[in-house]
Each structure stands twice: as structure tokens, then as C-alpha cells.
Image (spheres, rainbow, N blue to C red):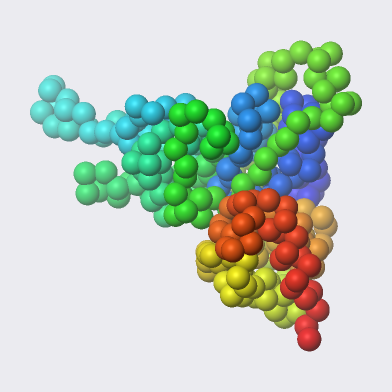
Amino acid sequence: MLRESIQSIVDEVSRVLLGKDDKIKLALACILSDGHLLIEDLPGMGKTTLAHALAHVLGLSYQRVQFTSDMLPADILGVPVYDQSKNQFEFHPGPVFTQVLLADEINRTTPKTQSALLEAMEEGQVTIEGEARPLPELFFVIATQNPLSQMGTFPLPESQLDRFLMRISLGYPDAKAERQLLLGGDARKKLPKLRACLGPEQLLEIKAAAQAVKTSDSVLNYLQRLVHYTRSAPDFNCGLSPRGALALLRASKTWAYMHARNYVIAEDIQTLLPAVVAHRVDPGSGGVDRGEPVLIARLRNEVNVMDD
């Protein structure tokens, strides 16, 4: 029954994001793996639409923040305000106190404001005026960013990128999907009509069931060989961190669960390499740009799937 809900979510989101079922599945796998999602693409490609649609169909509360260059950390986290009638300060929570935070164009704000999300994304809490304030049990950041070639952008530091379980790009629609889009009008107008396919309790059940998926020793050996290759091969200046390795394993379990299996296979890991790994590793002397397919192709082609 829970697996049927997953396909219902994909079908529902595809009503507003035409021809992108594969990207929707990746984004959903990220959320079901208890991870944060970064969507990078040119303006007007449907990044914000996907983020809104996911929050809506998962039945979660959400807040949207439009990041700008003059935004301050307090605009996201909240701030204590003096109440004269009570003669004391009262905390006014910011938009981060929600289940899904839609961080729109996150790389248009300064590194200082970007870093305000680090504690929230890693520990599920924020510390303000020395007091730790917990966030909801289900807390996800779905952030969008424009390519760094766009004017007025600030690159996300590696520490921030590593907090995102996946980074995906949507790309241009194919001819058929674009024709449907042209005939159907603005897809964003359909967002309020999307049906909530899950609630918080069902989402927690799916997360638990996905992480109960089994991983054989041979698959774990393959994953460790991939990780070791990124750390030792001259193609990479910066290898995959332990957090990144755990993210790849967690997402692979969810991907297997979404495809009606209770065990992980090597193809699950290979499918998720571009989304989970590409933004976490730095190319070395090979001169390959971060995230290019060549980088992932080297991992797929040069690391043995089977144990020696």
C-alpha cells in the first residue's frame, strides 16, 4: 500500500512538471531518505514548481523564502522581540520553523546568510541567543539555485553542499512535454488542486521501511571501492566524505524500496551517483568540471562492480 502511494505522488507531481518523471522520482527518493534537496538549473525551468508540488503532495507544512543579497540570518531563523507590555523578550520564529522550507535561489544571498541553515540542516535545530530551539521532526530543505554564470550569485561553500543529500537539474522539456505545456498554460495554477497523497505518519513509515532494506556484503564492498576511488585517484582533489558515503547508501536503500525490492543492487548505487556524489567531489588534474557526466562515468567504468 505504501509503495502504491509512491507512484501516486509521482503521477500527481507530473501534472505540473511535464515529462520529468525521472527527476521527480529522484527528488522523492531524496525526501524519503530524510535528506535535503538542491535543484540547480536556469530560471524558468520548473525548479520552484517542483519544490511546491512535493511539499503539497506529501501533506507537509511549508514556507517559501526568496533569498536576496540583503537578507540576514534573522530573516530565516527568527529573532527575539521586546514585548513592552510583558517587560520581556519573546522569540518570533522565522520561516525555518516548518516541515518543508523552500529556499528559493539560495545562492543569491551572502555566505553569512547561507550558513544560517547549516545547523538546521544537520541537527534539526537552531541556536539563537544561546538557546537551542528544535525544528519539527520532519524537516526538509528544498533549495533552488541558478547556475554560477548568472549575475548576482554566491557559490555555496563545500560544507553547505555536503548537507544536501542530492543535487539535480531538470533540463529543458522534450518536444512532446513542451507542446502539452504550451497548450495547457501555466502549470503553477494547478498547484492548489494537487491532491495530498501522504501525511506525516505515512511518510515516517515509508522512511523506516526503506532503511530496513538489506544490503549484501558484495554491494557494500562495491560502495567502499567507489568511495576509495574518489579519495585516491588523481582525477579527484577532494574525495567523498563519510557523510557522503552514508548518503549514497541511504538513498540506494530508498531507491530499491521504491522499485519493490527489499535488497540493494549495484545498479541502484550507479543510478544515484550523479545526484548524490557529483556535487561532493572536486576534480583533480583531469580538469573535469564539477558534476559533469565524465566525472561519474569514470566512477562507473573504472571501479569493479564484482569482488575480485
